[in-house]
Length: 112
Image (cartoon, rainbow, N blue to C red; front, side, top):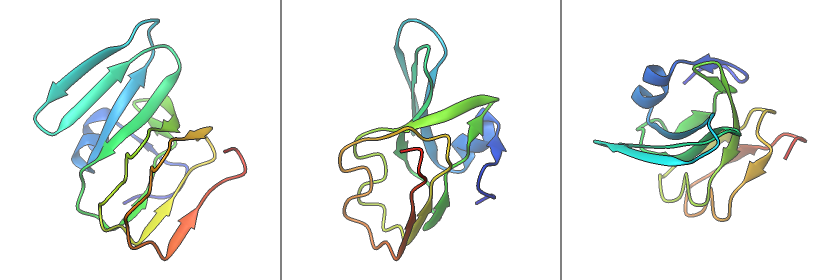
């Protein structure tokens, strides 16, 4: 995918297979478009689902200039992933976020 600590645009993130929550407002809105779901509120970007084909995933630090700080419950479950690299902007990883994969490498920063 791309280097750890990198930044993607919204369009690049979607193309890479991430379904994301933009947390930039005081309310939460869920938008469903084809294979992408977004939730908007004031805290940052949250990964809610990964539908990409890449089996070695590097989660970006920023999407459209907004910090990616949460991986939601089951976001990467059953994707046959072999490695995941998590940036140090991530503060919370939800329950079962990486369950049922074929991981040989999972890099979790001290920030979690």
